[in-house]
Structure formats: structure tokens, C-alpha cells
Image (cartoon, rainbow, N blue to C red; front, side, top):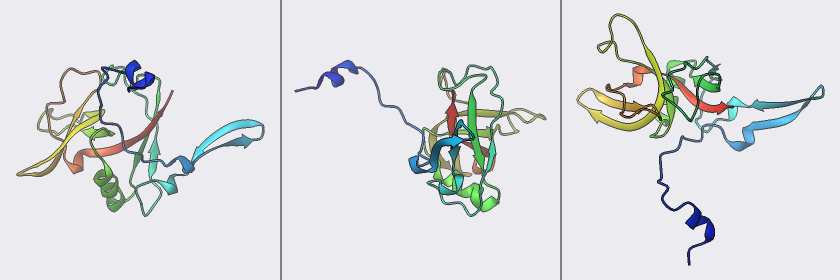
Amino acid sequence: MMCWISRLFTGTIERASPSDFVPRGSIVFGQVNGDTKISINLSQLNVQLDNPPLVWMPDIPDTNSMDPCFDRGHNNILIQGTTPGDQQKLIDYLKVGDIAVYRIPPSFIEPQKFYAIHRMVEVGTDNEGRYFRFKGDNNYARDPYKARDKNILWVSIGTIF
């Protein structure tokens, strides 16, 4: 017998979800001088880094490519390894469903450097090694180029609305 909640969601499809970079126990809620605060202990990430990561909360451009996940004005929290080894650990932890900022390979757009923040939809290997394919959640097609490890700059660990 199907439960009522299963009938409610009939027709939904499973999609790849992001990795759990931040364990629940490392998110702390509390009062500081009468104000409610939220903090994240980044030394307790699910990927073991040797040093605390860099943290960046960039302005999100109004491209609509990641609607409804996030859009202009949202607070996307990104991390980057402070050493090449830690950065590689973050990249190795990535899986389909994760969101990352990557540099668009220069052979596609010269001489400027462009960046995208999209969801990973494929990980594969070819004669050049490992590659990642990305797609904006609101885009019809995936991005037309393969990103390599060296192109991955930041990893999204969450969005605060």
C-alpha cells in the first residue's frame, strides 16, 4: 500500500543533490550580546583539509542561469583551499550535483577570462585526463566546454536566502 505522501509526490524525478561538505554539528546557533548568530566551524568539514579554507561570498550576477537555486542578491558561500593540496582535496570530493565556480577554458573565449558558477552534471575522463561538465539549473543545455581540475576555483557549500 502506497502512503499518502508518496502519492502526493508522484511524478517527481530524482536529481543529483550537492555533497554534504558541512556536517550539521559544525553549524552553531546562539546568542551573542543579545543577537542571534549563526556560525560554521569550517575546521569540521566532511573533506579533511590541512588548513582552514578561504571563504568568499560574491555578488551573484543577474544571469538567471541558476534560478531557482540562487539569483542576484543571494548569499552563496564558496570555499577554496589555501594550498594546492587542499584545493585538490576539495576538487577530488566533488561529485555530480555539486556547484562550483570554474574558469571557462581560454580556448573558447580569448583573451578575456570568464567564470561560471553552475552545477556539475558529469565527471569523466578522456585523453587529457579528468574533466567536469556543468550546467546552469535554468539553462536548456549544459555548458559547451569541459572544465579540468585546474579550472575549478571555488566550491559552493551553501546559499543563505
